Image (tube, rainbow, N blue to C red; front, side, top):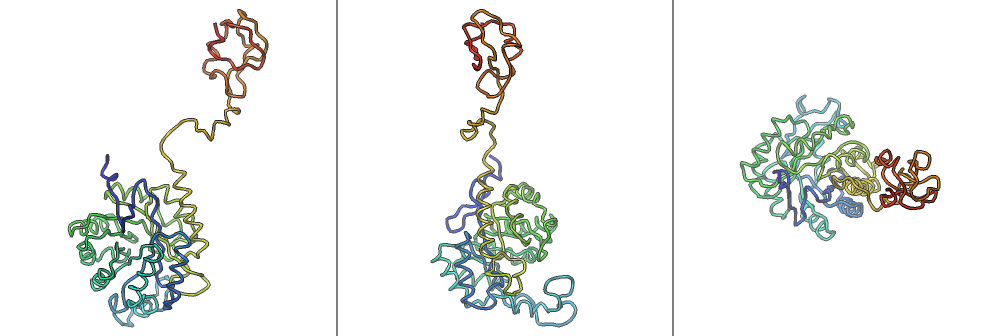
Length: 354
């Protein structure tokens, strides 16, 4: 058994890793638009769409940046948030902390896991008091090694997105987590473009991350649509995270690259089909294929043959269906004799060959 075979997460009793169904996370992000009732409705919709977990983000504008209007803090380099300052963006996008314990209780009642991405140590302390079962490190925080160490010391599973990161930076983050005591780590392949073109995703990184770091791997996806997360399953994704919204028509900081409920449900259903289709490595005739034997070729008697007469190219042919001797034996039986009378249309077997 390889090291990778032993790489699993366990979140509130749910085993995540090889041989288990992919763990589907609905990222609530800023799609509540600062409306608590809308946040609760999104949670219900995500549960109905098949989500295993709902992820929050735990920060305030002041725990993630400072209020400053100079060029370093103003967005203007091709993002969907161009023109805003960081402080303004996070003021629109953050999830009020006073909601989060109640959202956790809503999730418990629904039977979905609720955890969060903390963005500083005070957020970790807050989430620990809530009793979350895991932590998510956002792509932009993968280089925040003090935060990673602080999260690791909780002993909870850590799921880290890898957007923008070099392999060396990923290695540094994983090492920081392990050195601080983390035992259960997952890495999510990710492109930190919003939205991300499919060409930027590089799903082949998923098995490479598993091999390189002996961790559970998955996908944090910001593409439009459901094709990429479905394809990720074939590359070994055991966790899939996707932003979730009630409607993209409702403008919000993250709505443009989020899935609506029907789309999310389609994604989950398609992922389950993809998982089932992966199966195992085996080459054999299945019961479902058995009716198809009629379309295979095999050796048949095509003219009446009396006992003792020779079997020839005139009275034997390789034809459909596939119920006679395999075609590999055709040349070997030509010139031998029939052991009994054979009627035209008889599948040849060895008892008929003298």
